Amino acid sequence: MNPINCLKLNCSWTVEHWRRGVLLRRSIFKNAVTLLAQNSILETMFAGASQEVLWYLGLIDSDSFDLLEVNDTMLAHPGWSEYVDYTEITRPVWATGAATNGLKINTLAIDFNINADGSVRGGLLASDDTKGGTAGLLWGTALFAEEMVVETGDVIKALYGIQAG
Image (cartoon, rainbow, N blue to C red; front, top):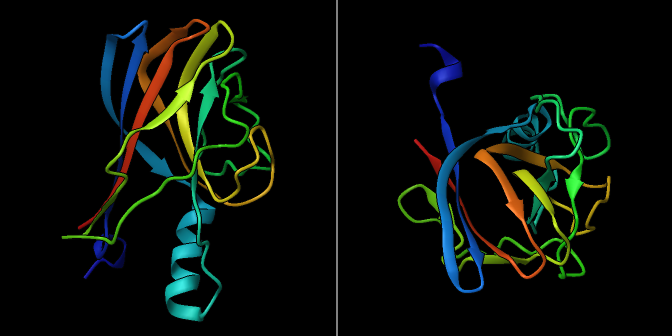
């Protein structure tokens, strides 16, 4: 048996871009789980480490975007920066119900109410709610299918799910 293949996590985003009540685009895409998050799973399940209880969604800025790396952390992610031009004071909480059939997902879309023109390249899931902050565990990052050019008043609606299989 190859132990690397004994558990696979499929993580995906569904994102809608709305402007003045009109759906501009809907995208579904996968994301990678960072090495620190993978290690956290193993340490939590098999070594008694403390779990992260709350998780938060964030956005990745297109400005100066270079790349996402599996070694990225909230403290060090040299290929990207967080997009913070939305009205919510903190990163929105990823609120889910109980896992069902190996799936954990938020059933109500999380809204990012954009308050400045800009462009968004992707998303992130982290264990700290500080918008633009460097604390907490970075679970994973993802690139949107294409850059999303946003204007003040736009809304990005996001669903995030993790499926074990």
